[in-house]
Image 1 (spheres, one colour):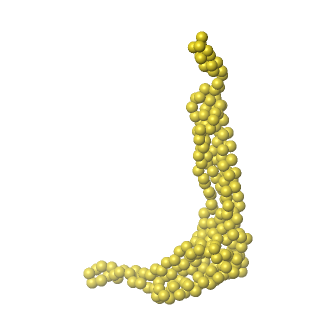
Image 2 (image 1 turned 30 degrees about the vertical axis):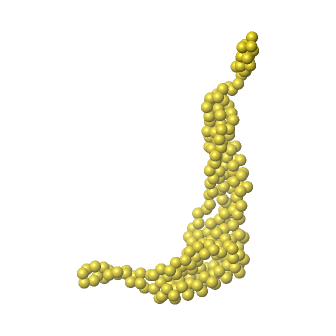
Image 3 (image 1 turned 90 degrees about the horizontal axis):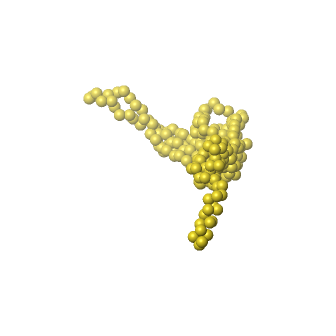
Length: 237
């Protein structure tokens, strides 16, 4: 009797109608939230020429000092101005002339060029156009690009995560139903993060640019995207 009593719980368990494990369903979900940027970065600077490296550097130093002073006057804090590039290079003049042996003569140095660039963070987008205009006015002759961003995108990404999971679950339920089963427990979740930022376009200053009006700029919107991979157990009915 003891033997049959011990087997009774197993017999009862076998009689229950439990879902049968039939494998897994792995689905990728996508979530994307659009938002307007609240800050921008400008990479701008001054390139000067001189007969000597010293002459080119002195001219560059004076122009950069004026540019940085103008940026601070426009409300840019010192922490938001960072030197991002500096170079001193000779200007070479190439020739087709040849020496007595027929070899092309080497290039000659014909002056020097000094470039100094700064990356400027603009936290008030309504001032961006006027800052670009003022930068050119005081001597910035190269603006390599403008990029937009959101200072704190954490909440935007959280909303994208929710949307990505909802998308993944809807697809997984569709597949599970089509396979004649249902979703079971979640096995794993992993994500990849994406950020779609408008590409900066190089802007080159010209001498004839006037300081009569701020440069028109359009910030548009940015996409904050999350892709999530979720794996569920697949239970058969």
